[in-house]
Amino acid sequence: MILNADGSTAVAVLEPVGAPTDAAPVVYTAGQVLAEWRAAERRLDAIPDGTAEWRPARHDIDVFRRRYQAMFKR
Image 1 (cartoon, rainbow, N blue to C red):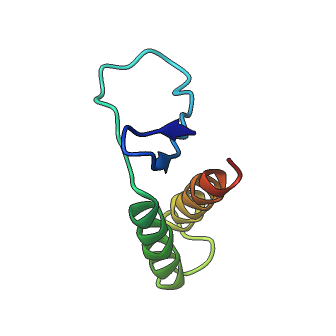
Image 2: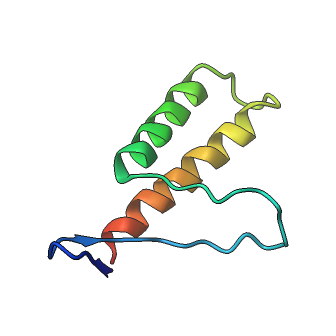
């Protein structure tokens, strides 16, 4: 938890990337994480089970759900 100068607090959840990378860091607000989670659920609803696109969409849901829930476990 981060205490801001104005007395408010914020939560930052850091995740390991697993390997060196030159990619820029990505920062999401809680609202953005929730929006991405819901968008992934809508994509999954439109994809037939067992297709090549289904597994990545399911993975996105799991990732964004985990990120959203991690913010509130702090």
